[in-house]
Length: 284
Ligand code: MN
Image 1 (cartoon, rainbow, N blue to C red):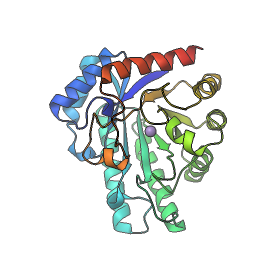
Image 2 (tube, rainbow, N blue to C red):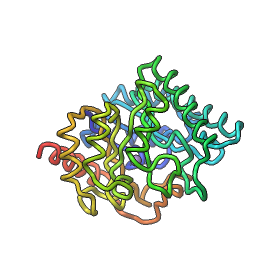
Image 3 (cartoon, protein in one colour):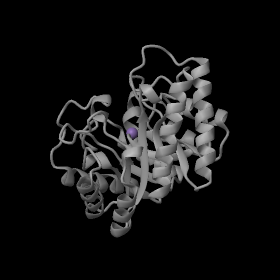
Image 4 (cartoon, protein in one colour):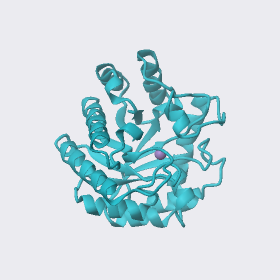
């Protein structure tokens, strides 16, 4: 198992100074991996990032949520094309930093929708992920689809929907990305979805997030249920700690995720505490 941390625990943007700080802090806190926030992948200094990762012995993945102008579940061919271009940029970022996974809300926009997804929109999303997966396979990269709560997407809100979507796409390197924060809102259990995804051979990425997105163990998530299932599933992949506070702000992403409150200020303490929390739950 590889323990990762989301870059926004450390920094809100990816300036050279912030990239250096985030990757060094990840290593200092004892993590194996950093999840890069590839919200604007074309604007990323890939060479510097790859160099810093090598220097600190840290692995990488990347995640993003698409926006309204790049929504691949849209019926508008131009919007879908813009989304596909952004996903190709994000995939190149993963490849060129030696990363292993591209994950997040890459099958729709990350936003509150005011209507259900249409049949044509869903087909556009399926076709996009199939093509992305084929391109990713050439570089041995896994595509992981992160279902989110109903206020952040109208396409995938549960593990069952995600497995159905993956079945429709029919590619071996498309996996389900389970996030405890979203599971806690939409699932009936914190264990059954983990076991279902693992039984389908599609448990491919995990986000550890508390019910209020703050420090793990200080909210209402049933952690013993979740980690018990994760341990018994035999999952051996990436487990990334994800937490957001108004102490670290990204110009657009923080607003999209409704990060209005200051849930922590000391991110070093948060990061080391979260790693201890994840390790001790998986041992127990
Ligand atoms: Mn997440």
